[in-house]
Image 1 (cartoon, rainbow, N blue to C red):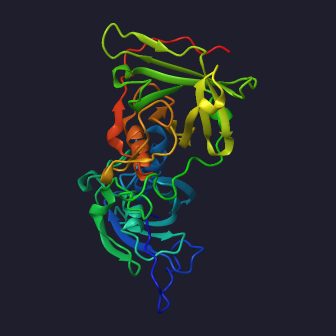
Image 2 (spheres, rainbow, N blue to C red; image 1 turned 90 degrees about the horizontal axis):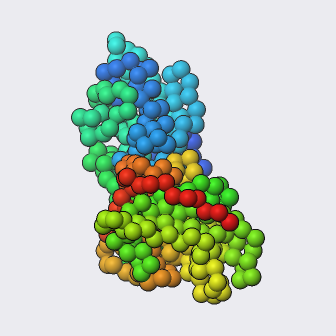
Image 3 (cartoon, rainbow, N blue to C red; image 1 turned 90 degrees about the vertical axis):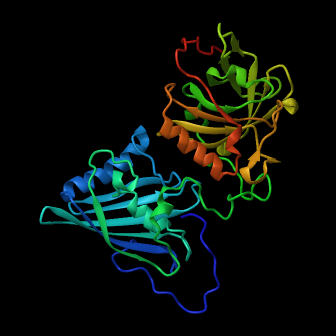
Length: 373
């Protein structure tokens, strides 16, 4: 759940209702809703599951700060979900119960934070609303577009219930809202990183920051691929192959061939260093995997921590050779706009200034020869 407000408590708070998901925290934000949908419950349940499933295919993304939903359990008349915030810091659990009444579906739902929280900036309410709202509400149904009327909304003390909050793409977080320092407090890379899986297939770059060795004039048909190698004299573990083409015709090719190598610095946290293979590793620059999902087919990469401030816009890396760069990788070459926007939101939540990112043209690209070691 996004940036919760820590308050001194002078009196005990009432715990969430019995039909809400349980929480490890005795004091936590929650919200209950009662909704009438003008569709059979089977369609309502199918639509909710389609939205959750659509996150992995690009058919749907959470308009409320790109959180990630997952189905925990499903029965004939109930569904249990979990939602993790876009910055992956907070988890909420949801439960819906359904009852067909006169051709309509009566829905009762509850979302409960799994951490100590009071103010939630409408997060628990939005957790629920985003799974049943219609196109008339500004949402994007996947299978069934039905009207859903909220007959009762009961947030816990201090929690919000503002519909407009649900369609915002800026995470309200105590760590990452308008950073006052660069890198932002708590900035870090991916956890439990699977290097072997990451380098298994080619990555296509959809957006990237201009740096000395990769100017914006080369934002065409850019890709990267990697292979494990025997540790070199200088201690490099991975062969790196980068490819880019000039935007302007005749699209001159810039291909690194076998000249680049990477050293694994912290495998579990996705921290590597990259340099020409003939240079000692002391001359290598940081290559950090900040976020990665093989299932969804994306990765967010930076040239280390963003140490330069761009004011309210966020933080940036440098623009030279080492300590420079920001990239959005996808497994598929064809651009998936919803996925790109999701990764941009992740970068924003980590404190980055997104204005540095430029689109890469991945259309009409010829197949290049894969890296051979």
